[in-house]
Amino acid sequence: MNYLDKQTLFSSTIKAIDYLQEIECRSVAPSQKALSLLSAFNEPLTSEGKDTLATIEFLHQYGSPSTIASNGGRYFGFVIGGAHTASLAAHWLASAWDQNAGLHATSPINAKIESVTEKWLTEILPVAEGSSVGFVTGVTMANFCALAAARSKILQHLGWDVEANGLYGAPRINVVVGEEVHGSLLKALSMLGLGRDRVIRVPTDENGRMREDALPPLDVRTILCLQAGNVNTGAMDSGLLVAKAKEMGAWVHIDGAFGLWAGASDYKKHLTNGYKLADSWATDGHKWLNVPYDNGLVICRDGNQLRRAMSMNADYLDQTEDRIPYQYTPELSRRARAIDIWATMRTLGKSGIENLVTRTCVFAEFMASKLTAAGFEILNTVETNQVLVSFGNDDETNRVINEIQMSGICWCSGTIWKGRRAMRISISSAKTTEEDIKHSLESILKIARKKIFSGNEILSYSGLF
Ligand SMILES: Cc1ncc(COP(=O)(O)O)c(C=O)c1O
Image 1: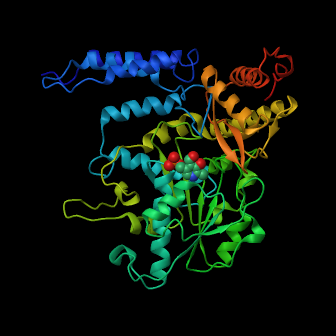
Image 2: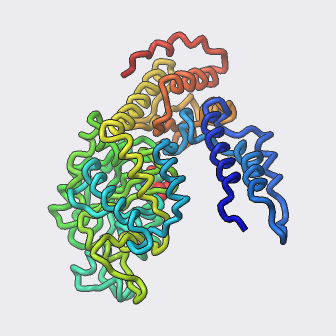
């Protein structure tokens, strides 16, 4: 049997390239016709199997039309960045390598790239120099790992070894979060036995930032969780809170799923002043850095603390002087996802990353200003790359969201902000061009006004940069 089926590999690569080429011309959301084709997958598992090439052709024929074009320039839903060509190509090559990234012994190349990428990340992000980085699936897991390190450190300080003895009978830990904490951080707390309902919630301001004047007294048994980038408003908690909390002896963690990347932009980095003093940070590669799923980063000032919380041993696992990747993450076996980040950072360089972050923030400001000029209400202060717009009452906003999603021209999601229905425009992709912004604005305004839009007032934005 020939395991190297070149025809299938070539064919799937060509199909993938065709898909990427066509993405800007197709509907962002799949049509009803495309969705109806999904019933083709309702087939029984055969005992003799099917031809490999035919399987890939089937997947492309019936699967590709039913994808959401989130890898194109007019997808503004959730916080989804698309995949930069460098990261996608490296991802393909690394998939062919099929490395088990857990050990140096199973993948020296992965261990090397993790070390180099760790250094680059700590240079470009607003984190402490010399921090350790673990390469996880996303920020849900990055929050989990960072909070496990915090739990370990605090309990060690109080004379308790949580890794050995668990939480039964352990001293109490207090967790302080903002009112606007992301649900995934609460989920991480629940998985760690710290409880999602035991947290102390600090009131937030009109844009969702933790109020500095409302910070409760903190101490050495407290974890303070700040947020860089509110998922609705894009608001960034103040770095002044970090210094205050550190003075009181607390462990400070920053959930910066996308907002931490503001520190890589000359235009926005002032929003991250003071963040470097924190103890741990969580961020995603698969959001603003435009790296394929799944790709998250846990960053810890004290690498020993992260390794203590994540480590395990078995006689058959060699210990070496080199980096041992499994000691930084919950998994032993996993894919070599640092390679995707490395390739993106190497290709874009510092200025390419700065441009990506700055440019998407400027697009968000532009969208907000044009929607305001057209008479619609922007519900947030646009601090980074998120815009919340209301089209009047909740029913009317719902109508506009639904029609925009069905139009296929662009895709925006909905949310509730301060009790009001809003449409969220999240601009996170390097693929978004000025043309995409113009085209999307035209269609949003046309749908919102329920009439054909002449376009004159929004065509005058050339020379935005
Ligand atoms: C502030 C914040 N934290 C955590 C998450 C969860 O990240 P992930 O989906 O990578 O687990 C998100 C996702 O949007 C987020 O915005």
